[in-house]
Length: 323
Image 1: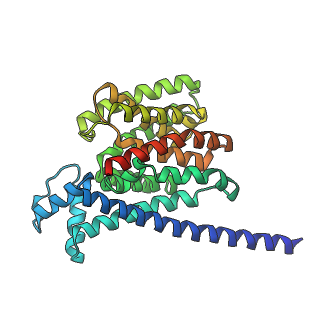
Image 2: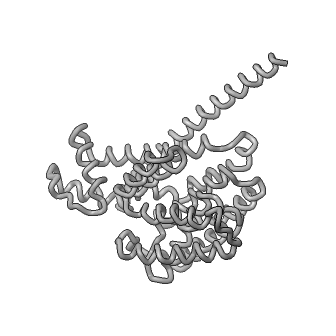
Image 3: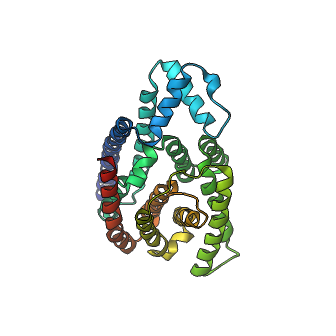
């Protein structure tokens, strides 16, 4: 009997090792895909990459040109890296894009509960990571992508002072992490064991809280300048309905709560004429993490079926904009 247990243990260890190796390889491939996406954006002159390169080309070696603003930490870091390693700015940005895409993809991969769940989650997993709203976090929005990566590792891997220190670092890199941190605090207030509220009441309170956060965001100046078309907003609204109503237990889970909260911020932005489209990708990623960690098979299947049209249409929309 002990021999059988030992053999099963060895088989389990080998299986986990192979899974980690596969996750590592796929993460590298995804990172390279994001770099390719970044190069395409650079050649087309679209996204944040073009404005960043223009700034550093104009600045040259003069670090004093970096003003004390929201992107101060990021730009100073890029300055020092280019100077220390004597490499071009584009190489630094490509490396950063590769690393954050690789790290997030690997983090999600190794958190899949079992091979049984892998079968259910895999189609959705790849659809989410190749959704244009998610891709842009790692390619066009490199700075916010770095901040989000730091935040995700703080939430998933650390506790106590280390977690809070990483929260501060992520906010220093990009102020757009502040609403996520506000939602983090709000989650523990609403889910206090002494306060039990029905789903609809919790949803209403979350919506009211996110409205305040959305309004406050217009004062901190991390709202997107460009707004999406009506048809694209309707498409995102469809995805929002999936995230909010597919599983009522989502708002009782930290990652599900953050996901619903961010999609609410986006919706609230439509009412106050502020574009929070940057949070759509964050919301989708956080909901995927909720499904990976605590999602039931039925929820995963229904969400995958419902998400497929959104993925296909947004992908086609993105391709037509590139052509």
